[in-house]
Length: 337
Ligand code: SAM
Ligand code: SF4
Ligand code: SF4
Image 1 (cartoon, protein in one colour):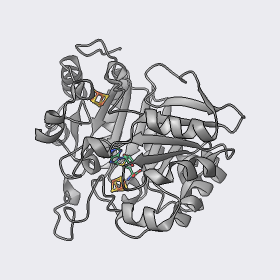
Image 2 (image 1 turned 90 degrees about the horizontal axis):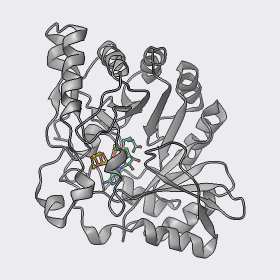
Image 3 (image 1 turned 120 degrees about the horizontal axis):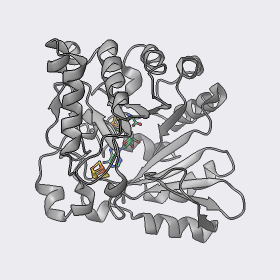
């Protein structure tokens, strides 16, 4: 079945947040002043079990979902994520399972286990190459070397090419753009620059802290000439560029300056089982209540389809300074990227 929303967009991808907890406190996501020791994370019993996630995935696949991404919070703080991957991988219709992680808990063994369980691709976030900048941005003093080691573990385990996400925030790490590009050039790993987004309401987002994709690309091009590469598939979020000298490719995710809502085929499931149809939504449909209330597969499928059918989200295309500041929105650490 091919389920389409009001703007004609198919339901093709599902992002599954497996926890709202994280061992980092990135300034742009979970600033430590607001996510302190007294922060109320979801209690364990509210989280969807692996069985519940697997059941929903099967029903989503029946409506057209082909790609899964596991995210969080930090997905690797959830115990035995490999088991979940192993449960999801055989789902009829699912063609691709990927993971977004900060890499801090990724050992070589864990990377192997995830790959053997059926993980196809991995994205590891890293915002700078110098410890002073990175430690300040991750909020917990986590060193760069350990994330670089995680990238190597992932590649060695067969999860290459590893994608590396760098959120660029002016005044925080924009000076690190060229160093990051230089480091990953020629390694086969794909660095993606992400414009700082106004997700949630806690990260103090300001338009003047967004370094635009245009500026990022101009700076890279000035050092190492680049040319645009065609998308790998329709609706790809990152725009691909390649070095003209054969040094590989980079990507830019310009959600602020070049929104891509028209091709947005992503549904998002929170760790407690709420379905969101946009990263910037304020409310989500409660699926856990249905799962735990004994609803049939048909009833849950009907709910998923109904939510998708009436979807009209295109927040980034409509974003203005007023909507960015004034609106209640879910947090990135709650719903994932
Ligand atoms: N903890 C994992 C990680 O950091 O990779 C997965 C969850 S994190 C919310 C997913 C991605 O969203 C990361 O690459 C992170 O850098 C990015 N992100 C978080 N807050 C952001 C923001 N305000 N603007 C742009 N990207 C953001
Ligand atoms: Fe944690 Fe990822 Fe958010 Fe950083 S971006 S605080 S690592 S969830
Ligand atoms: Fe999709 Fe919402 Fe982002 Fe637009 S703003 S691309 S609809 S998640």
